Amino acid sequence: MRSAALIGTGSYLPDNVLTNFDLEKMVDTSNEWIMKRTGISERRIADKEMATSDLSIHAARRAIKSAKIDPLEIDMIIVSTSTPDSAFPSTACSVQNGIGAKNSYGFDLAAACSGFVYGLDLADGMIKSSRYDTVLVVGAEIFSRIIDWEDKSTCVLFGDAAGAAIIQVSEEPGIIASYCGADGAYADADLLGVPAGGSRMPASAATVDQKLHTVKMRGQEVFKLGVRIMPEAAQKVLDTAGVSIDQVDLVIPHQANSRIIEAVGDRIGIDPEKIYVNVNQYGNTSAASVIVALDEAIREEHAKVGDLILLTVFGAGLTWGSTLIRL
Ligand code: UT7
Image (tube, rainbow, N blue to C red; front, side, top):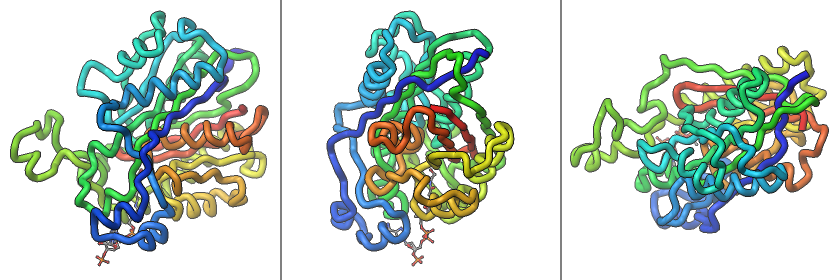
């Protein structure tokens, strides 16, 4: 049977580390508060001259190398991001050029923190329908460029990163089940979003003065939504696949906050040792979060060939999704 398998992953984390102690010098916060409420101890910040496509290209090259393919085999490139290089042209076109994938076309996908799982869903559909054989899915963000560095309630949470995966047609089951959802009733930029810089509120001196080009979030509401939605999405793919949670080898939830991750683990009834967590090191890297975690888990041998891996995510929109993968 024609299936879509994940045959290679890669990630890129900028070298520059911003610790909680650095943040103590920037805003009225403390390492203790950040650790207790979020589990984050440090995050990475991209160099000024780097754009999201630059991070993506590094991650994509590593994924291509681990998949042992030629970039010319790639048919389609999906770059999931909320921080594209610019409104247009797409970040995906710069990635295509950077990796020399001349036989592909590509586009950016906007689904906030759910972007990588949305991208996998698309790649899976395109491959299973015989449209394409090889798809590159990237999740990449430079949130440090859209953060209000004077807002202690958001600036401690996010980090910069990119992750990439090569999905290719296969005889063996790879992506076993995939589910994505959304509820636009929550598409309120103050709940979670960036109010200005688009067609609703174009950039002006006033929007810049009021810092409306930076991330706004009502943290507690978002927290509760995440704890409810990620287990529901995970259960949906398990039901579709006819798999019980005990059969899953590793769960990788969106890395937003260690308390959310613990609550999600409790609700889906998985042994805490089977939940992969790296939010402590990198913070919330939005669309890059689960693919960076999966790539790290593979490299550290927490995830091995043959393992059953469950991804579950949620983000602004609201958007959510889950993927069950046999590695
Ligand atoms: O990818 C999805 C996007 N985001 C998320 O998933 C984040 C979801 N939300 C959260 O993770 C949590 O809601 C936060 C970590 C953002 C906040 O934790 P909380 O336990 O919900 O705290 P809170 O918002 O209720 O704030 C409690 C207090 C407030 O002070 P008062 O009003 O009680 O005096 C805040 O002003 O903590 C204060 N506070 C801080 N204090 C020190 C908020 N941020 C900070 C800070 N340092 N960085």
